[in-house]
Length: 239
Image (cartoon, rainbow, N blue to C red; front, top):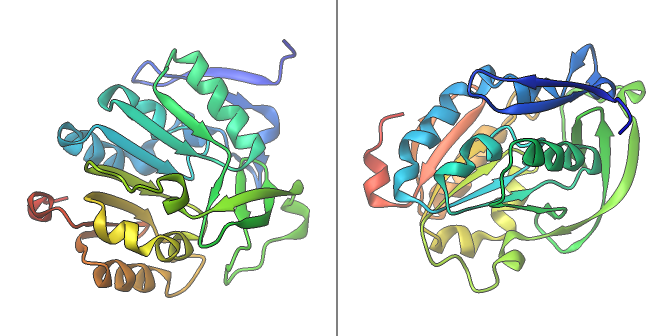
């Protein structure tokens, strides 16, 4: 196998591939898997609440920094990652850690079923970004078409048991929720949503408005994520 980077073991004993070409804007993007500190409190939150759930859905799974660390706590993990580059990292990290219960999908989750253009920027990828800060052309490494479908198309009969869903899709969160609004309304869920307010002004408020309209209660609002639920027991959780 050709040498493309290095392997890093984190404090939890998980092994991560850090590829040399994942660097973008002076950041080695694969390190988002190996170094979880920026997401630590949300990871610990899901761990703490996981005992009442059997399924974890990871939309925008990247290289698996949530899915891989949480897989042992769930019966199954559904990881959606449309980026070829990130998915290669996700497959590698899953194999390196001997994990068998992560179901990896190449679909982009969104509002409609259609072909969309994905933009790869190292280990960062996005689809039709609505950023207020323009993307620098020299940071774009590749573009190509991927298949987008609503989450309700993946689960046409709905999800019959309570689930934890993490959504981190570089500003596409509203399209994902509105594209399967009935499903988000009916499915008993604990939602951890990255709102990308720093890049898309007003996105946090829009995400909150939509989820409240769909019957969810906000239990946390942070600089990067909001947490909502429509499960009565979970509404009493203190983040």
